[in-house]
Image (cartoon, rainbow, N blue to C red):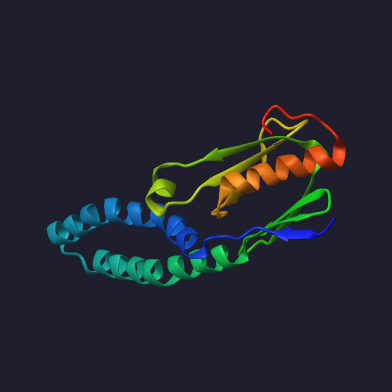
Amino acid sequence: MNEIEFEIDRGAVKYYLMAPPLFMGVILLPPLVLATCVSRELWLICFLFVCLILFLGFVPWFCWQQSQNFRYRLVGSTLRVDGGVLVLFRKAIPLERITDVALVQGPFMRFCDIWAMRIQTAGSSQCEATLIGVRDPERVRDLILSRRQSVYGEKSEDA
């Protein structure tokens, strides 16, 4: 069978990956500013400045790189998942091991209008892979489950 690469909304994934660090920055910034106003120590102002520079430079670059490196594709009877920035990973999941494909959307994902697909496999208590930002996730889930059924002739409760 041929290779099918799933489309990813890379812009929305980048903003989703940036949301938690930005949220933490908004929560942590006022106490740091108050501490500089109260103590007026130069080292705290320098620390705040360095943190701000690192945050404004590193976090957007890291999130952009991570969103660019995600790649999900269906090759024959295998689901291939690639990703990572500092540590790259490539995972091959045989369709015969997939037991469930769950769609999940948390608050940050809802804000960015993206979904995560959690791939559950036989013999594992945790999800084997999480596909973030796949366009049209219901269609992709149905495609994975129908491909599994057509290759292995199993009847699925979800399909």
